[in-house]
Image 1: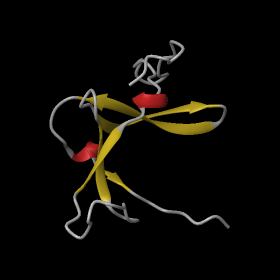
Image 2 (image 1 turned 60 degrees about the vertical axis):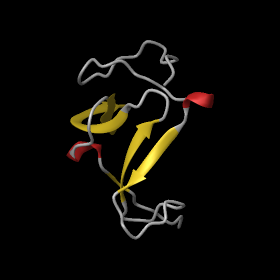
Image 3 (image 1 turned 180 degrees about the vertical axis):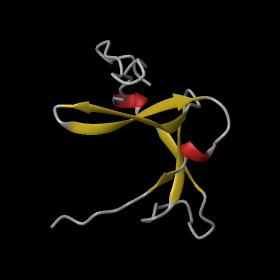
Length: 96
């Protein structure tokens, strides 16, 4: 992960912003699906996302915050085992 965050902190928790760019954007996506050949991710599939180099797992939090009238949910990286908030459901949308 990159430290190119411009020193921004989350307005809800005070955690530092971390951005991903260039070679730092290398994640391994693991699927819980037994029907997936690991080549593609399907809609409605449950996955976890792990940074390859640091081994940090992306975790969602129940900490919403608002910027310019848009609400966002905080996501953090952590070390350790995969738990419930580390699982992401893939949703595909078609452009109208």
